[in-house]
Image 1 (cartoon, rainbow, N blue to C red):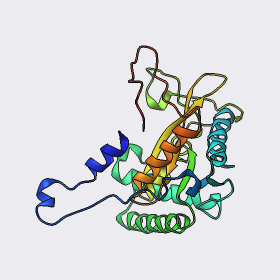
Image 2: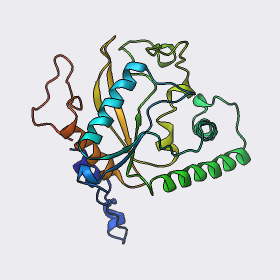
Image 3: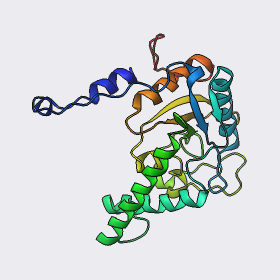
Image 4: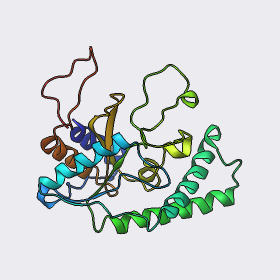
Length: 247
């Protein structure tokens, strides 16, 4: 369903197509798991991952490895975590310029916005070089599992990550893993990897792929469905899903 949707959505609007605009999503980089080159980055000293969530991510990546994929658990797109934080600082400035309600750093000048856009281009170059060596980057969606259902406002929701003393759910912490795809204009597919032991909270793994390689991210999700038992959608009580539903 995801692949079909992407192929439909990627097509230009009729008026654009009539006037020469065309675009076709490139095919997946790998359709055989044995040809897949994956990097796995699941934890950070700056923003540590919930320990139970981390175990689920590790198990999913190891399933890919046992199926024949090359999985590198030490490769990183940035040379240091300081580089990630610098990129996130630029992202927060750009985000604040678009939405004042999300402006954590105060008013931003036009000059500062242009500088942040230049910094964004550097982040894109970092990932271009990284994806010369790898087809996908596997990482968490957030540092913690899904937050338990509540009617509280977003700013009032809290969740203490298991095994992370003093973990904070402040905005910058929660976007550490997902801002990178947005900042670099990269496609990302999220697949389930199981539930935490303590609170039975659902967890997902983010599959980040190179620019315009949406079908690669979806294909790796399909590979995980085939080789990892916990990469299955488990419907909540009372929610019916056709038994043949697949990525």
